[in-house]
Length: 164
Picture 1 (cartoon, rainbow, N blue to C red):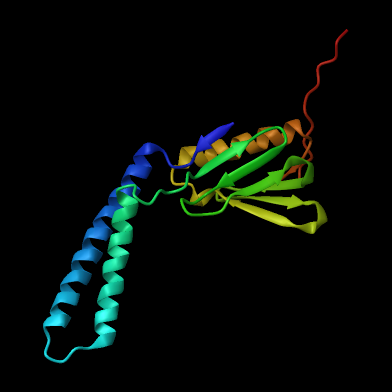
Picture 2 (cartoon, rainbow, N blue to C red; picture 1 turned 135 degrees about the vertical axis):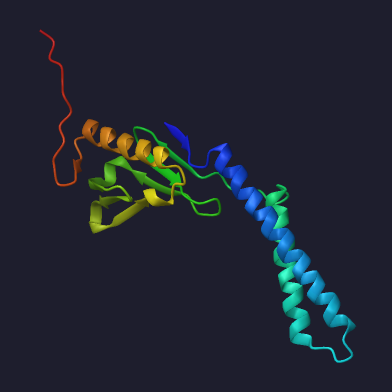
């Protein structure tokens, strides 16, 4: 199962925000830079600050126009592992089902207790669409039932069909 955590609508909205921020930062920084260069007494620290603001605006514009590509935020679950990236710039996280001892599922996060006493947290509140977050949580619960993993302190057992 593979789920994109940023639907096209959300991604478009994010890029539009980057575009507006980029225009604002670049124009403000460029204006401040030009004004500082016209002054009789140059203030080097103000020139550097205006240049940095302009560069941040260019960076935001590059993201908005896909010159600088964002990573895909996703959730993927296979019979062997769970992998996900919650942010557009975050790192991939991978959990193997064989290492999962138990799970705690709430409305805002899923906490995996792993072998060796390690814990890994998947923040459902970082997923922009609430229905996608609910889908991820439900899928994890169902997979835990299949794999006989404890969820919220209750040991799950998959139903088995006996052939007669």
